[in-house]
Image (tube, rainbow, N blue to C red; front, side, top):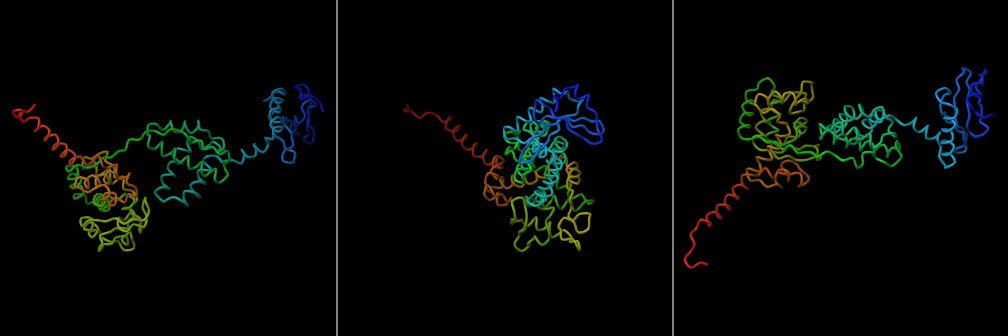
Length: 388
């Protein structure tokens, strides 16, 4: 044993086997000398009933004094009940965010989420989380890292909030699986961006223009049939895309959907929708109503044909989901109440349907006109004789 100094370290020559030089002043502080001549500072201690070692750094990159200071930190941690070697091993075993994200998609999302949700989660992980946090070890990710990711997406607040939600679930699952054990979800208390609900609906003139385009489109009948059914049923796109003939009950006027965003549900359909369904040819060997190009499959890409159709109708910016809003708006204008519209749309919560209440403007204007007219009429009447 000798005091580890630059002179003593430089004077140490390698042998045929590696050996240790221990410091005579700081117990546990040492130097490992390899046959190659490489010299590594380390700290040695007992933890969990066995001898553990933690490398501090190479001689040359670190001075003996700097290495001694680091060794003192490790040894002090041990005296307080810590285990630097165990922490090192845990950190090395911790997966990166990219590695854990793939396991999250394969084992959790695939088992617990619907196909449409699986696609949304996969998109958030691969397009937004991995580029920013993929190389971070999951135990090292902090709230500051999450805030930085969220703020980098401020131009798309809706996607930023969805990504934050996926990330929060990832950390919750990581704690459940014991991958992260600090009890802290770094997504907690990260303020989400304010979202403005986009509730666009078609006017009578816009419906007429879209109808004309649908009647004149002969090159993509599957897409046209899909749009017609969306307009006439108020269903979600995924519900019509995956609709099978076995789900259609013509006698009862129902679509018996085994799976939707809100679970299994019945969708009442009118005669106009029934007529569209009866006009769609059935393809042998394909159980789907809206068939795709792959044999036996449904149409998977509606965005590209929809963009072509809406452009021809002069409806740029109109989303497919806005057709569902239009269905709700038209029902309101025809006098249906919110509970009935909720049943037509398959909502499970009244608050969801209540979003459409402000669209019912004509009856409100009529009532306002009636009240204001009565008051104006009274204001214009002559004062009776003798009235004070």
